[in-house]
Image 1: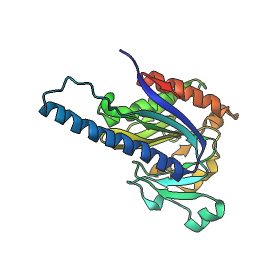
Image 2: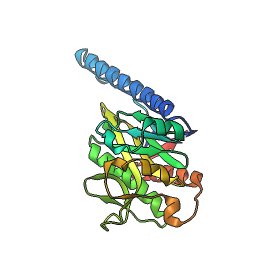
Image 3: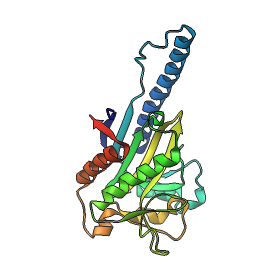
Length: 246
């Protein structure tokens, strides 16, 4: 069976709202296509011509980018996990957005790789939990290439270092997604050479008493962010059994 094709885009450093609007546009187009496909199928069934090929199909995307400093609050998030005022954010040049993804408060900034898969899960499986575990696996495999052991904490989405050692857990990748008609958007934020001091102004993901880390912190050296992106692409193809195309 041929692998499904996923269009890959590297948007580089892009404003958070611009990337959000871009994702929304891709999701909206796919949702409209699914509506048209369903309508077409119903018409074919009514006219007994269901053997006719359907030229309509949704498109998968895998987007990587970085953002200027920004705090984003998920739809289930709590403002009390933001420990800095809007005036202080303005002074520090940090943006703030309430988003429609799952999860709580997190930070995006330069030298952090943000991944936005726009995937039609009905072409894979209809299981959000499995989708999140597979996204985590992409990160875990990528970290392994830097001799970093990533893991999961029960009940917490994302990837952690020393996940099973109480008091030493360090989050290296946050995740939060939205799904509409089984089409995903938003995704993950992997700290690479990220300035971790930005996380001191929030309670990351609303989780008390747990640290945040980065690849650079774990290997005690800066890493080539383009190389990390290449590894993420390769591992995304492996985990989801797809082929990325430009």
